[in-house]
Image: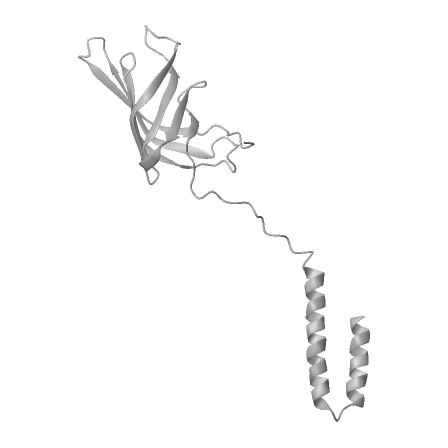
Length: 183
């Protein structure tokens, strides 16, 4: 179609060599037609840009792994960077061996990805944490490790008389549990 028009146009401009403005206007017309044809041919091939909305801020609230299988940390982001939550773990002292214990946060704060919290004392044991909370290796929220808590966990233990207190420190990484994104 286009080649036929171009041949017809060349013959017409050759016959009307005295009217150059007609030929120039015709050249512009042909170029515009060519451009339109190219756009129409190429547009179905180009992929459409995804229209998924991106979250304005990350919602770090959720459950994260803890030290052993079956244990976890629940973190809830409150207003003004305050954190609430608890550690749910198996007891390991003689009085609570293998019993499930919940240790609620006494205080907690998230400031520009820097996370700190302290738990309440339960059966002579409490925890402090100082580290970061941010994106992990998971690609989507419904994958384990989409968010990760990394830092230093301190475990304090006191005897029954509360006269002797011991402290254990360790570097930890707690991965977020997969979220139900169907809601």
